[in-house]
Image 1 (cartoon, rainbow, N blue to C red):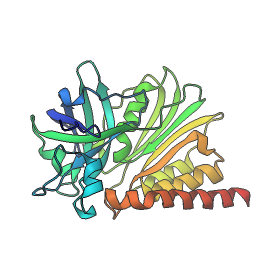
Image 2: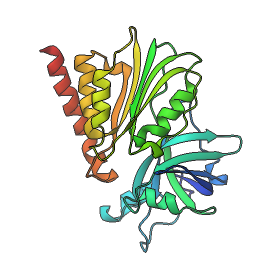
Image 3: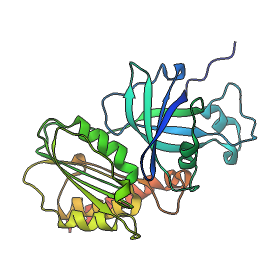
Length: 278
């Protein structure tokens, strides 16, 4: 008897909804999510699996087996997306996708997804949830970080102080963000400027409240690197109080960014430690 692969989940699209000009929500479910589980983090993510059309893959399908037995150029492509919501009772997983026309792989798929379509995924992973003991919270990101920011806001205790800065293309890309926290939400509109430019300026100009901050900063790697240095070196926030990393990098697809991300983080930390020590 062939062993059933255990390295992925199989979801079936239940419904889709455009929630802003450039973001579509895809809800998946089905018996293939029977073993899916989250652990209370607000940045849980899955890696969607996109096999190449026309390629014969091992049966039963397994990403691990593909990588062990096939040429690298034929490995299924992976795209990382935040879990916007997971309902274990109804077994419904909600994923939000930024869509810019035909650009990319997962965005166009999501824009055309229809009930009954199948999607394979690895995970979930994750590492952040707002610390309820923090004096205040700082949530920063571009569109790619919106699902995690929205989930974090929903989890914050009633009245918890929070500063939220989100950069999007235009006002049509805003979303309703629900929270019981005392959250000051600032929307920044790119309007043709480089991604993150307005976010960096806004954070530098922000008057930080007193007390212990727990920060979440994610999005395009270039502006994240600038803000990471600012928060660590100029604001003297320790890495243990920062969830900060580039979700994506301009000019690189997901595979290329994963290849360089570890070294990118290592270099950034070394530069920051040298600046702090000087």
